[in-house]
Length: 159
Length: 294
Ligand code: FES
Ligand code: FES
Image (cartoon, rainbow over all chains, first blue to last red):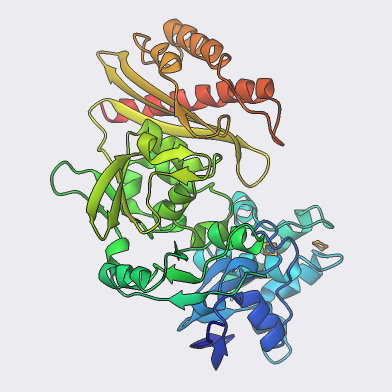
């Protein structure tokens, strides 16, 4: 049986040294090894975005990204958005706009929107729509989500 | 669950071939993994060793060839890197537009152009466009390097002329000539296009002097359709001109004879119709690029 590979990575700013099997995805590593269950597995086919995490700031599908490929990199998940129990403006905007119902897509939506706002702090409505194009929500019809991201951009600009 | 495998992480092309030779051939290259890991997860393929190409500097980067100024895109350059490249925006804006709409942002951040071409999915966006652009791929193995034109490279659905131990090191796209425009358009309902159409045309003295059209997602590999392209030759290079409208109508009629495959995206008739619609958009986009390069 193939041996494990030693990797070092940071998750939400915390350094980890781990021995992992090469076939383990980053979503499974986060969920099963590190207990970070924010990233969800839904389609398992890179379509729905429920598993979205950021690696060095870039959104990837946690369901189809190998943990070993995050070796030496910085991983960000939804668990890292709040500080000391205080939600960040994007999370608060999702609540203000009732931008989730079942909440299954929400961690992925938040991380895609985080990547979008980091790259483009004042996106237009069209740019927000393009930014979350690959994240599927079965509940909300997207409009509250788009409004929430725009509100967070606004809040970010005022700080 | 992805079946277990041993991982090799070469830091150069030479190390990559050494890693291959250390296996008994039960191995596969991977870069983004967006295609191969999916197939492995579905139980359709498994390999004893996966060889990661992301640490190989020779496969990185976008440059212009010293001689003719051809656009050279390294084998492990991601879709997203192409989408934001200034060089590509200047040399081949149609490719930037295409890359901005491949699958979703996560696939674009992870997936590579080289991997997309090697996987040879019949609904590949770039394969159709690169075919009309007369692009070629550079394959390197232990025995040496060879350049293969896209139409010789893709030999069937999920099949290419690449030998298992060869690497696609670069995609090479000839520079635009004066008066040339190249554009790609698609219609999609899901992650991959339902139909894809590309056109390359050259304008001289106000008329279309030369045209190439390729279609993808309708057939089991992307194909050039010379009779469709020929309909444009001689028409005025003006989307509002009567001769252009007639040429487009003629081209659409000829597309109607294409032996298209029906799938989840629609019947053959519907897909041929859609192809005609997006052909019009592509032709108009190519005309405006051609005017800018006059
Ligand atoms: S679970 Fe990864 S994209 Fe759906
Ligand atoms: S809130 Fe239920 S899927 Fe989006």
